[in-house]
Amino acid sequence: MSKKRQGLHWQDIPLTTKVLLMVTLVTLLMFFANLILYLQVNRLTERLQQVYTSNISLTELSETLDDVHTNTYNYLLVKSSDTLESYYKSEEDYRSLLSGLNDTVTDNPVMLLEKNIRRMSESYLKETENAITYKRGRNVEKYRQSFSNAGRLYEYLNTWIDELNNRQFRNNSDSFVSLQRAVRPMAAVSTALIMVMMGVNTLMLYFMLRGIVRPLSDLATTARIVGEGNFHVKMPPTDSRDEVGVVTRTFNTMVSSLEDYMRLSRENLEKEQQMKERQLMMEASLKEAQLKYLQSQINPHFLFNSLNAGAQLAMMEDAEQTSIFVQRMADFFRYNVKKGTEDATLQEEVEAVENYIYILNVRFAGDIHFYKEIDESVLSCRVPSMILQPVVENAVTHGIRNIEWEGRIDLTVAGEDGMIRISVKDNGKGIAPEKIREILSGEDGRNEEVMPSQDSTGIGLRNVIRRLELYYEKTGLMEILSGGENQGTEVIIRIPWNT
Image (tube, rainbow, N blue to C red; front, side, top):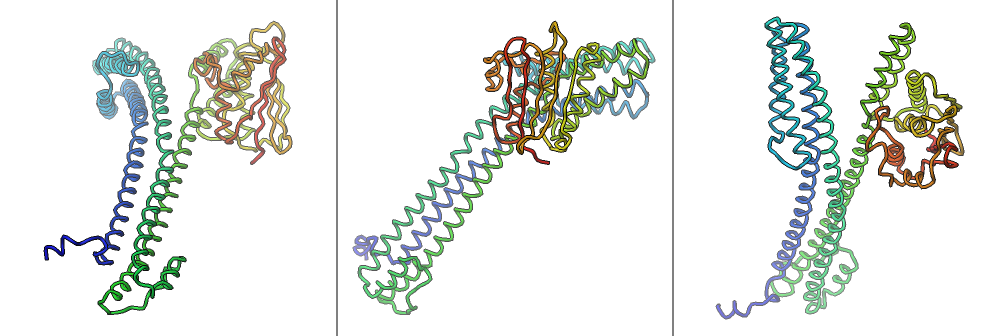
């Protein structure tokens, strides 16, 4: 018995056992391959979710700060137990969120900004607490002074939180790009694994068939049919326990295994398709995040300066003119807020430009001469929001402002060969050819998007170009023409005509 075991070789193992071993091996290989891919996708998904957790936390911190300030004001305005309870609840929530910020000395700009926010928040909460205490003690002068101090700290905190949020968003965007690059090779790896599995299975099938066909010539016809791809053909069942019977039964088991193999191959192809679909979804999510980020850049200084101009106008004129100005301002900024995360019609874009020009003319005594020629048949076409006003703003700021002759801006919107042609032309300072090339290629490192002026909405030409490219998924939609110094500039946008 012992000698027989010592002489046992692969060919001595029953064919059924061989098939079971091979199927088990293939199943385990496929299982581990798919497990590795699943774990990798799951790990990347978790990292993707963690990328923007910091921005969500900062948004919650900013909202809670607003609640504290609002509840403080409400208590000072209407002294009641409900408003006091709301104040203490929001203060507790805000302190809880502050505990997650850095409080140690560091050279890291982000962590240093967190430390400053935390320290200033303590001062702010101290001032609000003093205001509440003085209010309860009916010390009017002191609670007003404390609330005024808290208001100044509140404005600084909002500015610092926004700056920290922007810094972390840029860092998170870089992390997102790295994750996207890590996902791309996964499809190739999956395909390679499937090809390897197919190669291994093919080799196993070859050796198995060779071991069967060689000693059993009477099975050659059936084996040839099976080799041609017809896996539904089997040998007639037999109860014989001799070698031929064993081979016949094992042959039938092999054919069944081939059917299982084809099923597994189909399942793996379906899984590969699912992986590709996930990759496309991730790329689409990146484009949506970029689009929302680019649409969110509005400079609050423009709002503050313009409202100051409205206050000055109220002192100089009657209430009717002030009402018109304030209404125009309200329409302009309502459009900014409403359309910050969605598209708009060309008509809404033109109205936003008209409001913007009106506001500037009030502020600068009507120095801007604006003319328009609009084809009303294209005004219903939907476009990315805030694409015309930044172009007009650029013409005002960098074109006609501070020139010695009368400045003029012409806006033209018309259909042209299945496209919509939008032209913003000024008679101002003009742009050098190398500057035009830098703007269109994104090489201009001094773009106003990096450090917007206080009279700007904060959305520059490169912003408009990127959003047009993301929205229509094509390049070359903007053209800038200029004859040179003091020859004026024309910005032309050509977009598909669709409603």
